[in-house]
Image 1 (cartoon, rainbow, N blue to C red):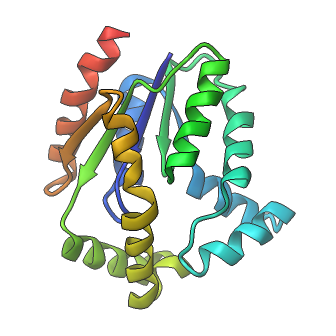
Image 2 (tube, one colour):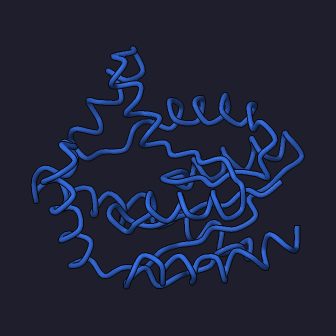
Amino acid sequence: MIHLILFGPPGVGKGTQSQRIIQHFDLLHIASGDLLRIQIMNQSDLGIKAKLYMDKGELVPDEIVISMIESILSSLDGKNGVVFDGFPRTPPQAEALDGLLKSRGEEISALVALKVPKEELVKRLESRGLTSGRADDSSIKTIENRLKVYDNKTSPVIKHYSEQGKYHPVNGVGMIDDVSKRLIDIIEPIVEAI
């Protein structure tokens, strides 16, 4: 079973590239942000709680996200595995994910991190904010806070998987097709080795 983490800061292109990866390798896409937004749209208790954090550009508490991931992993429907997009976001989430997978006799195959300069990320998020209607992309203050939260709380996940020999950085700048090719070139040997 393949368990890939597509990693990087907000605006790096995880959503776009994860769609290409899931099609290429026949994987299930688990995007914690999308799952949370569905809960918000449905105005569930979970969604109402999550919205309070997301509107401020803060991370949704681990226990909320991890319980959602656990329920989704039990319904893979014949897929070759999973691409985690936007999860784990903290070292404790990475440890919880490792524990959850270990209980299933599985493990993370690789963390593939898209790398893009901060100035480019800000431009991408501002542009997305104009078209998406997402509150978390709506102001430069919120965008700056999201990138700061990523630097302080999320980027340490790289160290967690680097220590396991599972970290693979990929240049995320350029045409979408070029970035996709770089990702597939990194992921293909990992998949073949499983």
